[in-house]
Length: 251
Image 1 (cartoon, rainbow, N blue to C red):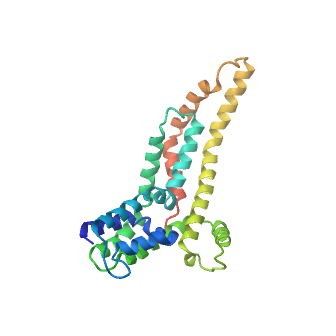
Image 2: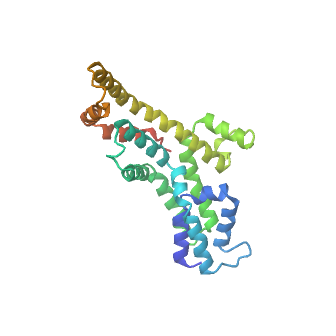
Image 3: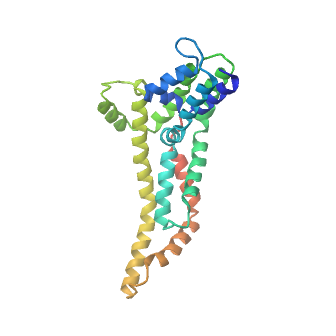
C-alpha cells in the first residue's frame, strides 16, 4: 500500500475502525485485505480506494455513536425546543455546536490514539490491524467511563455473552451498545432539567392570558421574549456548555 493510502486508511478508521473490526466481521475482512490480505498479496490501488471510500461512508454513524456527540446534540435540541426556537435556531447550528464540544471532550482520546496508534503505524512499526487494536483501548476506556453498570449488564445479558466480571473484557459491540444506551439516558436527564424552567414560564403565561380573556393571543408570542430574557440574564449558554462538558467523565 502506498504511504498516502496508509495515512488515509488509519486517519479515517482510527476513531471508528477499532469498533468496526469487532462490530462487523465483513469490515474486519476488508481491513485485512486493505493491509495486504491473508495471503500477503496487496490489493490494487483501485480496490483499496473502493474499500476506503466504503468505510468512510460509515464514519458519520460511528462519530455519533462512539463519542459524546449523541449526548450533546440531544440536549441542545431539547434546549432549542424548550426555548421555542424551532425556526430561529437552525439545526445546522445545533449540530455544529455539538460537534465542536465533542472535539473538545474527545481531544485526550484523540491524542492517545494519535500517539500510540497512528504514529507507530505511520513509521511502519506496527500493522494496520495492530494499530486498530491499540486505538480501541482509549476509546473503550472513554465509553466505559460514561456507561452505567446497569446498562452494561443488561446489554451483556441480551447479547448472551454470559457472566464477565471485568467490564473491559466485554466484546466491543456490547460496550458500544451499553454506551449508546447510557448516553441516551444521560441526555434526557440533562434535557429535562433544562426544559422545566421554560415549561413553567409557558404555563404561567398561558394562565395569565386565559385569566385576562386573551385566549386568541398565542402564549408563545409572550413567553418567547421572556424565556430569551431569562436565558440571557442567567448566562444560559455558559451554564449549558459547562453542564455538558462536566457531565462527561474523564478517563
